[in-house]
Structure formats: structure tokens, C-alpha cells
Image (cartoon, rainbow, N blue to C red; front, side, top):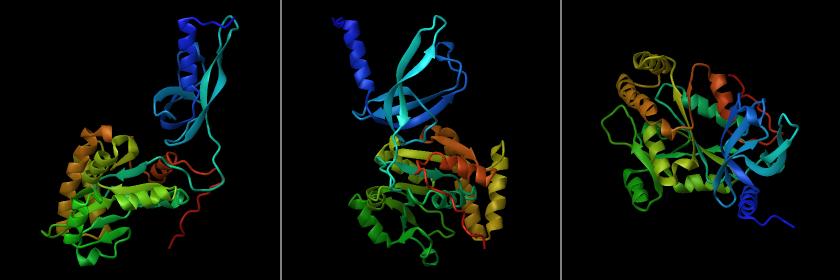
Length: 312
């Protein structure tokens, strides 16, 4: 006869609960797991199941955030008495041949102070993952000379205000300019949702105030958020590094460099004090290393290849 005791019933209910497909929210590797679960490294993930509950479970390999997974009963370990112990482990779901992946409302955000290289890093990441990512254009009231800036929708202040009042702007902030003219920038919900409907992952290369706005509107859990810091162990060293890069670019006036540096100081403090808003913070000491590390967090079709942009 089957065991109908309360303990067995609870165990069966718990097992049924775990035997659902899910999605990876976070993943790590235990290099030295407890002896009772074996001597080999274990990959552990936070998984959101189909019924929206969350569990911590083992996975068969390191997986990127957003990867779909399914449960399987697997051998976990064999104890000293030879008893074979099985438990539920999760494995990646085979992706369809189409490069368009189904992202459940995630936004990849890349944030850092001016001069840290966030635009360069972001553009390279977008190029490497172009099959599944797309940059979200920023909407701004801007001087005429920046009207042709790539990835920018320029509108009048009146139009921006109207969009804000209608709830079309989901994150907004003052833009740093080299004049005293008030300039606003922000993201439109329609631009983000358009990318989701295409089955792609929206990418924002942004600053901290806009990051806060996105987190407030969509929820922190909807952001794959990464911060960039300049090399240096002290704030003074990091600011000195940023200043050299801002001056070297030659694209900013002295007044804009001054304002950008003040803003950078505030953003360095933000990255230090609000680590809860970031999944990981990188030091941009080596460009290729940072880009490759970020790429690992973007689910890609198995047959994708990275073709680096042609050098001029």
C-alpha cells in the first residue's frame, strides 16, 4: 500500500512543486560544497517557477540570467554506505533555431560615470549580441548640435512634458550640458515594449538617475543591472582617471568636462552606496575582459558567432 502519512504527503507535494519549468534569476558556483552533497563543484541557481514561486536548486551547468530551465531527477551523491541519493536538478531548455528569444520583461542596464567607457562597452556588447539585443533610444530635449546623436529621439520641452503627463515616460532625469539651459532626458515605455514584442532584450546605456527610474517603474527584479568603475583604489585616483579620459576625447568643452566630473563624483558615490541596484559591478581596466564578462549574462543561440567590427 502507498504511504499516506502526512510526512509522505508533504514530501510528494514538495516534489510536485519543484517539478515545474522555470527561469534562472541568479546563478553561482560552489567550489567547495558541503561534504554531504559531494566533493565536486556545484552550480546553484535562484529559479522562478511557472507558478511564480522561487526556489534555490542545483543546475547542471553555469547559466545566464533569464535562461529557461526544466527539472530532472539526477544522482546527487553516493554516501559511504553506497546509498545513491537523488534529487531534482535543473537543466537548460533547448532553444529554438530562431535567434529571437522570449525575454519575460527584462531590461539590461549598463551604468557608470562619464568617461568610464560605458558607451564603448555597451556598443561592443550590442554588436556581439545583436541577434537578441537592441538598444533603447533615449528621448531628450537637447541643443541642436546633439540632435543627430545616435540612439536619441530629440523632442521639444513641451512634447516631453506632455509625454510625461500621459505616463509615456517611465524614467527621466536632467541631462548634463555645457550651458545653463535646462535639458531633460528619459525613456519611453513604447520604445522598451517594442523591443520586447520583437523577442529581444532591451539594453540601456544610462546614468544612475535613469536607472533608479527604471527600477521604480518596472521593479528591481526586471533589471539585469551592471555598473562600471574606472581603475583606482581611491576616489581621487578614479576621478583623475575619468578626467584624463574626458580631456582626451576632445568632444567636451571645458565647462562640460567640469560639470561631467561633478556628476561623476556623485555617481561613484551612488555605485558605492546603492549596490542593491546592481547585479554586478565591473572595473573597466581591460575593455575586452569586461565585454566578454557581460556577454556571458546574455542568453545566446548556440550557433551564434561574434564577428568583430571592422577597424578603420
